[in-house]
Image (tube, rainbow, N blue to C red; front, side):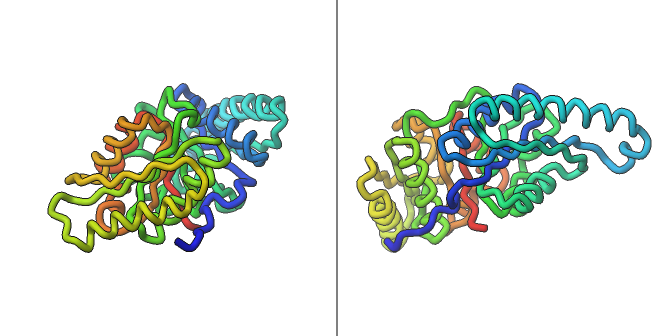
Length: 281
C-alpha cells in the first residue's frame, strides 16, 4: 500500500481532558506517559459543566468549581513539569463539554485528545449514545479513551481495518504507536458470514495492506468471520491480550457503525483497555 501519514502527526501537542475524579486517573497517566515518550507539550483542560442559567443564578458556586478545577489541574501540571515536560492548564466553563474539548484541541493544534471513560460523572454522556458522535464529529484530531484501571499499552496494539482510506489512517497510527512503544501489532478485518467474494477479498486485502504498512514491525493479521464488527474485534482483543485498540472514525459498512450508539459502547466497554479513534483533520 502507499504509506499513509499517521493522523497522529508528530504528536507535538496533546490535550488531556480531565474531570478531576478517579474516572480520569488512567487518562492522566496515559497522557503524561505519551507526552514523555514523544517529547510533546501537554495541555491540561478541565471543563466546569454549567448552564447559562446556573452561571447567572449561582455565580459563586460556579466560581468555586472553577477554582477547584484550577487547583486540581495545576497539581497535574506540577507533576508533568517534574517529569521534564512542558505543560499548560486551562479551565473552561460550558454547557457543552465535548464541544469545548474539541474547540480547545483545535485552537491549540493538538493531534491527540486523551480522555477517561466515565461511568458516573459530568462527562458520562461523552461516551454514550449520540454524544460520542458529537465529540468524534467535532474533533479535528484523534481521541484516546481510557477506562478506569487501564494502563498505557505494554503488551500489544490491535488495529481494526477494512482497507478504506480511514482504515489505512488507523493502521498508520497503530504502526506509529507500535514503533514508538516497541510493541507487536495485530490487524483485524471483520466480515459477515454471508459476505460475497468481493467483501472477503476486501478483508484479505485490508490485512495485506496493514502488513505492508507495518514493515519490519512484529505483525499478526487476522480475518474474522462474524455477524458484528465489534464482537469480532473484542474476540481478537481477548485472544491476543492487546491493551490498546485503534479504530478509524469511518469506513466501509461495518466499521462505519463503530461510532454509532451501542456498537461504540460495546467496543469501548468490552475492550477494558484504551481505545484510540483516529480522525483525519
